[in-house]
Image (cartoon, rainbow, N blue to C red; front, side, top):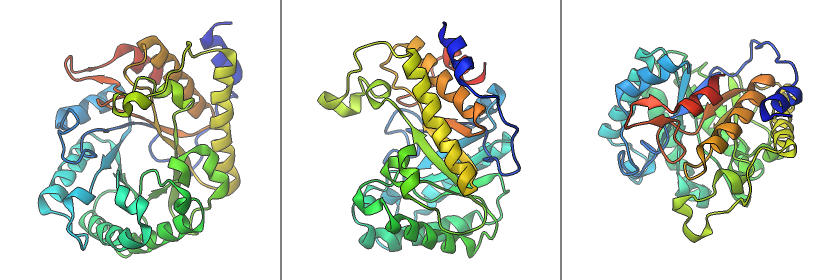
Length: 322
């Protein structure tokens, strides 16, 4: 049986989008840009033309990972220049008729020291929320990317998320807020976490399984970069994707939350046909189970767009849309 046939056989019939469907159905992360210590440090700067190319390709939204802590003072005040740059990119997305999911990324000192940095995070979100209080409902807020470690696997994460929600709601009464579980937002952490009781909350999980496949040859991991040792795409491989994505969908249905796979992708060191096959499998599983998706990433280490040719990589574009 071919890989494509097996994918179709494994996938249940696609369900209609419910009223509570995740707002972004087909998204792409603008990774390795504003989430670098300074935009451009990791290879590229976001341009208005990028947003229009994304919209023209058929995406309906983008996720904007932003590193804020390197642009804040000790009390959490964000530099005016950084806030203005984020606002510029949001404006470009809105001009292109794209939804945008605004994220706090790489706040590693908060992850390591919750008590010491929670006041700064709340101060940050007070500023973000006030700055964009009048933005369209197509702007979503995501308070914290990939909480991880024992200190974030339980009630402490829910307590922090509740405090951020309270802060945001002071100026944004109805805006959608996107939350995720601990353990790097892995699907397996959903059962150990409950979102705070609040209105207009959606849930995002991340998916890079098997990690040894998606991260093989990752330059930033150096000698610790994993090796997979075989081609991916066996019947067992494909069924495991279905099992994982179905688990996230089932959790969302039981708990009453719209769910998104907010990151998934394969490092550029992996052969392109393998990248495309895995990407297609995950994307198809998300759609079969009614989940929104947002591929990682636009033009960083897991690129779906060729910055030199100024076009989407055909094999990956097809994996995402065909």
